[in-house]
Length: 408
Image (cartoon, rainbow, N blue to C red; front, side, top):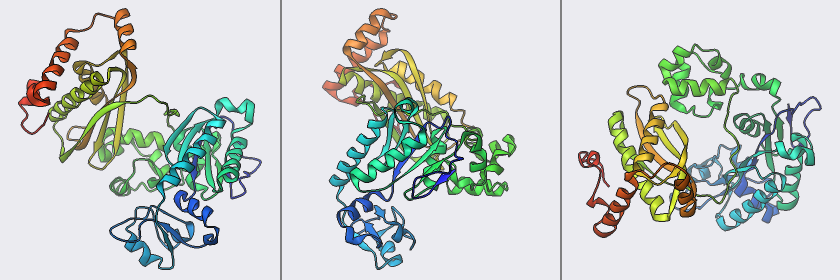
């Protein structure tokens, strides 16, 4: 299934149906610095500010062998690896290199979903006739990144995003790994449960108390036991991943923007009514932003972050674009209910976001062919005019006035 630094997988690696690639630069910032200072090759190098309360931004694999990790306090990193060369970051350069790398990806396929400066998902289904198998495409990307930018990357190839991401992690540095569709569970089940997205320290401890240490253990666990320990939503999420299922598609980055707002609570919130009031407040802010920009949204997204930092998103596309608070709020509440959170679930953050934006012309067209605009739309425009003259807190829904703990 795997390929090492040569990038050549065994002939038996079957990439049929494996059209999702996760491409990740190896020690990106540090690799760019070594490219420009080749005399540092083979030495432990740390990118970050050497003074103050700075943290490690990137480290070569030689520094990682000494225990240095990204986001580690620089003082600790220097104690672990006193011989390391510390280089101040050059963010402008890293951004420029990232743009060139992403251009290489888009030369392969338009279906590119950047995750950060140094990694992205690609769906190469439409590129196979022109460029060959997914494995050949992965080799081509690695070669072009090395030739054009002088750095290395690792490529995971699988049937979905979750498995492709795991594959790239397991073939670092400078490798390529195919997870055949038929070999998914053989690859996945021996891994520790910590390999699953959403399994942090506390969740790992809860699974260990159930005797579940590997992904295979979790996949075979009784659903009721998992739900009792983690909550139904988390249990279903992790069970799907443990069975190799991930339905998310590669979402290309576009010029389209979104607007929204979110709130992190000072204390974790368990009261659903408090959550709904916050959804109303955030829906109002989102709707005002849409109207201010002369836009309406096709899709409403909510974000829910639990006390253990597990983050859930739910979205719904509307029949017609909207910029109306009540429509956004009603959709947000429906999405909140659909999340299936257990009673007493502790939330630390809630957010509302509007995507799929259209301009005023698009809104007018939709309204002309759709149902008549609700009275709410004109009422909210009147509220906007009042707010612009007297301030955002001059007029608010009664539900928010009754909640003194919330601001406008």
